[in-house]
View 1 (tube, rainbow, N blue to C red):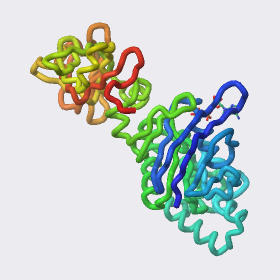
View 2 (view 1 turned 180 degrees about the horizontal axis):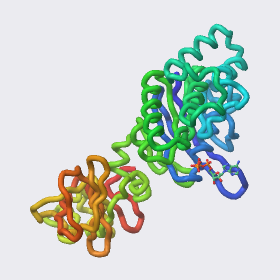
View 3 (view 1 turned 120 degrees about the vertical axis):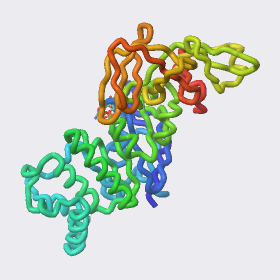
View 4 (view 1 turned 120 degrees about the horizontal axis):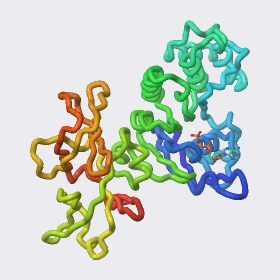
Length: 362
Ligand SMILES: Nc1ncnc2c1ncn2[C@@H]1O[C@H](COP(=O)(O)OP(=O)(O)OP(=O)(O)O)[C@@H](O)[C@H]1O
């Protein structure tokens, strides 16, 4: 069984500040968990602590029901894939893949079998006799993944494995990694600061900031119900729009008033005893252009940005820049006035002071 349990993990490199503080998380057997967060938030440190190549200051790591704190990396049944590939330059692709197995005293015939199977999966058969210096970036990354596969680990730990690749190759390899997960049935923990990778690969995403988890959830949960404005900003491309708003009460129900557009707030009426100041978050893909001006705000077209079959409408609203994403089915002129319709379901309400999502249970 390859479930992983992180129990109150902390990491302190110096005496001053914790790099990680009180990290707890249960990762299910065969789950694909993504650690997502800005540079320096502690993602790699956490991954390295699970791998056993970084000391744990406090807390425990369990793989299955075994506490692995005291186990050497090679005895943890994990395999790590690094951003910089970390291939041995003087060894061929075959030798790179065989090396870890030799150390583990896996018999030659078994080594050959596993390397052949991994080479088939990753389509690197023609490369087996080459040195790393004779490979492209994408090929090196395949070899690095191959070297992890042959170990037949319970857990794959991947630290930004695609960030050295160009955009096209990154897209291709992202799909390869997804297929690999389906095929191998292993548990994956994958570090990235790329939200597209996080959303497309992760069964769940753990969003980190300053050494702590901010939110853990499925991509859908995080997109639809971010716990706060930090998470909403982090998972949003193009960026989420924010508008000042106010809560109002009508006939015992709470509404949000966004410049005269009144939407059901789905908040308890008790909140109106001390109504917080509100910021309404509206994702560019969650608003639409309508003929009807009811429940809509009137905005001016600044410019348009065509992305494949979609268009980003960059609009001005009062002093603000507002973005709407929609399918590209007509052209828009600079200065054209448009009605942008808002819907209650897709307006996220944040407390202006705490920046927390008012509807979020966490
Ligand atoms: N060996 C070390 N000694 C002291 N501080 C360290 C060490 N390694 C990392 N740190 C610090 O710990 C913090 C977290 O680093 P870490 O590499 O885990 O972040 P990250 O989220 O993976 O960042 P990135 O996305 O840039 O790789 C950073 O402030 C970093 O400077």
